[in-house]
Image (cartoon, rainbow over all chains, first blue to last red; front, side, top):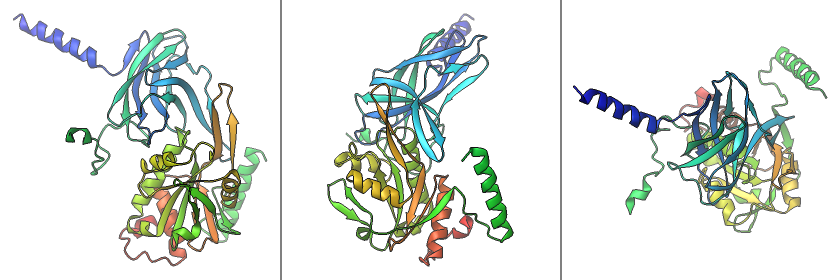
Length: 167
Length: 206
């Protein structure tokens, strides 16, 4: 009965290779997604959630991605009915807390995209934390105005995302 | 005015209107406007566009800019979803995206941007004066702000405006979920006598 442990080991290996949340020490970055960019727009937005499972606070120091010339953390705020977007300076993640990047709030602005972000694709994003160091995540591209990462199909309409198979 | 004071005022206003039997209070969330003249802007082909070019249609207007990656795509998606929700009544409504960054947003890129959200959506730009006039007429505020890193943002009101087919009256209201925007559109169209007989689920929005 040597096969069972072998299969188990393979399953565990495979599972760890595809595991979505990538942990580095006690920081976990999960549900990373971005919006498909409209037309030839050279800027895009990426979102995710960072959970601090550790006992010390940490900060997001910088963000990089090979798909963009620059990536910055921004925040959307409303003041007197006016929406304002401003850079977020090294946002902190307290122990036991989560920092959510989502539409209408904190977001990563991808500036100078080298190519449009297409729905269904994914790209790497490297988040550098003050203590945890670099955490690399795969960012899944959703439709242009998506308000959350898709877990299921949006509806009965096929938006032609399989169009690349026609050639 | 302080936030607390405004809240108190809004509560008093709501109470007063409630006592008068008016269900829908005129609050900070929406305001009526009278237009003094036509809106005149420029489309993606560089052609001058006026209200009269959308004859017989209500205009559903969102102000934003293409360099805005978080809020504006959300707003335009809400607008597109609201257009879907109003079903056949969409034939009476022309959705417009008016840029508050006319220096950057013009030409074919404007169309490439809008069609990504909805094929019915028309993107409009203009001279600084034309944009200022359109925004002013619809009670929309905007201001370009330079950031320390050399980038820029354009702060702007997060609202939608509905202009009547005559181009005389407009209602500007706070951006909301698509079903609430759809309800607002139905309410205005119905009040103006636009036929909605072919809208099957109209009662669900009342």
